[in-house]
Image 1 (cartoon, rainbow, N blue to C red):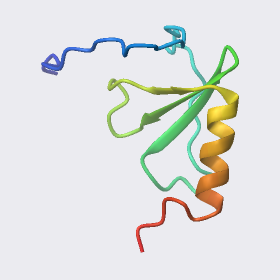
Image 2: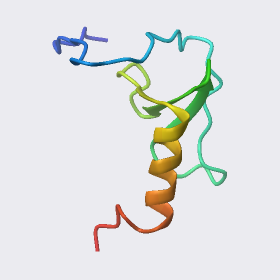
Image 3: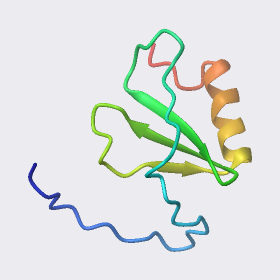
Image 4: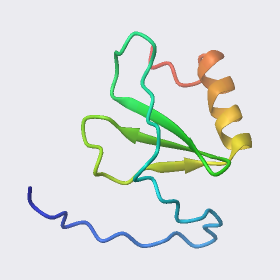
Amino acid sequence: MAESTIDQHPLAGWDKPDLDLSAADWRSSSNGRGDVQIAFVEGFVAMRNSGSPQSPSLIFTPAEWGAFVHGAREGEFDLT
């Protein structure tokens, strides 16, 4: 596989740890549909694209994850 040509730089004000996700227990939705997987690691929630697991993961605090889930349940991200 070709190496990524994207340089990754930490964001200003980034206050989340550089988590070791190599042994994370990645979970998909119960019916196995979709491209998103999540893992609970060291008190944080990591989210990745299951179709490209080598890509960077998004890291959320529990409060951020809770706000995201609440917004999704309320339809905040619906495209229609």
